Amino acid sequence: MIPVTQSYLPPMEEYLHYLNQIWESHQLTNHGPLVVELERKLKEYLGVRHLFLVGNGTIALQIAIRALGLRGEVITTPFSYVATTSSIVWEGCTPVFADIHPRTLCIDPQLVEESITTQTTAILATHVYGIPCHVDELQRIAMKHNLKLIYDAAHTFGARYKGSSLVSYGDVSTLSFHATKIFHTAEGGAIITNNDQVAHQISYMRNFGHKGQEDFWGLGINGKKSELHAAMGLCILPHLAECIAARKQVCGWYDERLAGSTLTRPLIPEGSEYNYAYYPVLFPTEKSLLRVREALNARQIFPRRYFYPSLTSLPYVSAKHCPRSEEISPRVLCLPLYNGLSENEVGLITETIIASL
Ligand SMILES: *Cc1c(COP(=O)(O)O)cnc(C)c1O
Image (cartoon, rainbow, N blue to C red):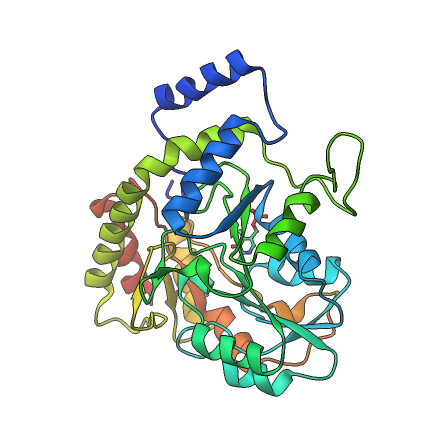
């Protein structure tokens, strides 16, 4: 069986080393020493001023929306994981979709600008598949119209743009450390900002608003991360370069074997250092995608339709149409990609695709 992805697991002895520390300290959660250590190492790795570990990437988005005090309309992408839109709705704001750029598949800045109304308070964009959004243009628009800019950077760990970590753009960026992501802690996430005041609020919000044991700063929620999860991150971080290199090699095998086929690939803009988070391919038609998927499934190969359907079809949003997202999302398939996928397996996958395209 070849799944679309397989979580990287570090050597078990390395995890046991941290478990021993937990058994000694008896501290399982509440901002323990391993969470503190992982936060420090991630800040250093990403080159950012503030980073808060939280329970998952969705609570990271929700806290970011709260900390920036968003209300009214938030302009967002219809081509992302459902959590990008659901967080906006969950926080009582209204998602307004701006369609995607046909090559990068990230939100199109021109359409963002056209969607701004007097009710708009923010832009929430996704660097989809780890491909950078048009960050300079989005920054310009946000400044001009006095909007907050949040990036759902769940796919971007290890990706850089114009020499900086992709998470350093915008007012706030959020990461997911779910087991399927490049860098993971089984479940987990982080909120990143370079703004001291926003950071101050997040520091209370993620811990019930506690200011000491008996005093409260204000409204908060449980966004905490456990020591067991932090331990997984501490084990994986030293192996990250090796994981990204392994993925790059797999992507190279796909590139070679699919060159000359009718499949196309999203555009990774110049100035990017890509992290090889996903291997999305665009089929000429949805029909060809379904035919190929059936042939792959028959050989126990299970790619995933990321991201399908377009979020414009969610039952709890009253969306305007986004023709590009609605036309592209039925034709996108993410091929299996993980550390340990062999050249032979990539050969089998690509032969099957080409034979039934
Ligand atoms: C994975 C993902 C999330 C949600 O992260 P969780 O850690 O699973 O809550 C949000 N947005 C995008 C784009 C994702 O891929």
